[in-house]
Length: 470
Image (spheres, rainbow, N blue to C red):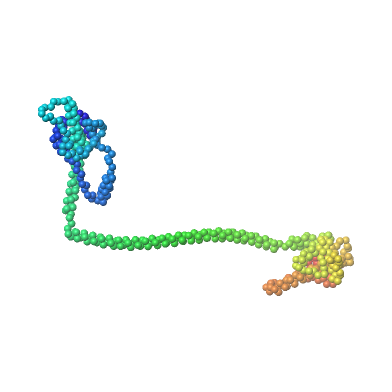
């Protein structure tokens, strides 16, 4: 006979002798005594969450596949697997009907006694083991516990069932207490009326709240539209502001460049103005013809004009000074646009000359007018007091003085015309010294310009100085 094992702890079990010789009646009694597991209708879910879980469970149960494992226990015949704690349940075991589940036990043959057969003894033992195994399978199929189990595991199962029973009893008592409280708290008609009025009031407030909500939603929509319009306007203003700042920055850059250019022009103007003032103050004639004094002598470019007994000036210096004075007269006349009539000035340094033109004389083939040439220089080898020796030199000095008088008259006439055009202008320019050249007696400021005669050096020197003449 094969060994059975506990389905929980896998301990080998020994079958009780009362189960070894089961007749069909005893087997049926034991099989019928096992309660059949009837499916219990599930309670209706009490909450929305419970309903949702129940619906999910039903959906999953409808699409459930075959089980991953099958219960099986070691059979008396066939291949045995003592390591498995599950059994195979056939349809006949799940729903036993009549004597189909009953194993026929050996019976006496008709007509006399049966002799024992060794082969029949082994077959009877196998049938007994199969009967016990089928009994355990039926018990396992009709309960939550796999059979067979040992006594220790039975105690543990009983202890767990007792704990579950106590928990169920407590839960039942709680439900009973709650039911009693609910029955005791049944509202009266007045309370029902108050509740109805409260419900109607709540519904009314709900309608008002819904109406207010609709109004608020409309107000919200209007405000959202207004906010969208304001956002669009703000974006447009931002774009305008960006354009304004870009234009302002461009204008600032242009203004800065213009200011820099203006500052540069002002600086250049100030420099040019100072340069112009310096140039205006600068007289090229003063630089070219530096007129001054050296004691009683008038000087031009450092050359003295005149001579005295106690200060005999060399004639080459006097001649050079007269040449510079004649050159200055020519330059001033050209600058003023003054034409000297009757004279032609020839400034050639210390040998300068003045040509007295004759209007009736013919013009030579070279284009020069024939006239009297007067030397504006002297050799200095003549004896003073002998006037005949200075006639040509004196005539040149008188001619020089006449040319100077014509230039002075031109300046006086020009300044007089300017005074008539501008009444607010001061009086016209006048020559500082009166010049007379009539009767070949040239005078300036009352001092004679001629050198012929005795003791004329001092008066001649004063006339040349001009500022000391009276």
